[in-house]
Length: 232
Image 1 (cartoon, rainbow, N blue to C red):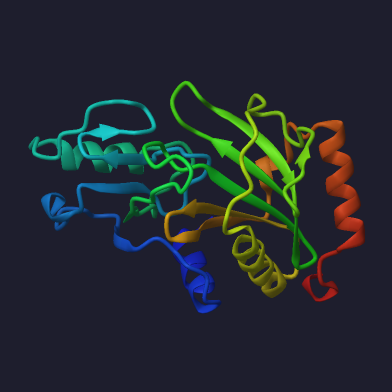
Image 2: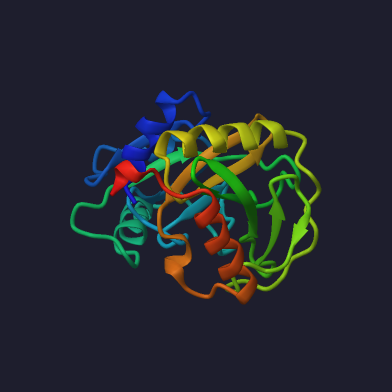
């Protein structure tokens, strides 16, 4: 999914986004040392955290590897890591964004709050922890009641407290979903600044690894809150 196109659409709806520092395929003119101490680099059309660097000072928070932007070869490493990731293409650009601080765990890679939406409203949330040696997920209703596993691609995680900004999170998700009027998964971060939008997909988990419960809640939601007929 093209993250640049998504940014323009979501920004027009008044939904907060991380600051965009840079986006280009040829990064020869990128002044690495001018970037903030913390930033995120990723393919502008990637998925599933492939080719993503979460630079926190001198550490990549996703892998735990050391990062030294003063190294002469760092720019080449950055380019190759992002542009050669699985799922990229000859048109892929290096996208560099603001490093987001998680409201619950400020020292960790932010939790990924995925709003699964049908017919213009969020039905349930999937919260993924991508931190090294902690990869897990949990599911919640719109009102934040814990649900059984919907998708079985990560082990079950611990309970996540109700976000203080849940009302805003639901409001922003509903706003984007109402505009699209189709089944969507909307990815947010719950930050120290409130909810912040990441990206969306119309093909969650590529349709794979849904549990029996996941298939039931998804199909029922799609029947109760169908896509807009005009889409077809």
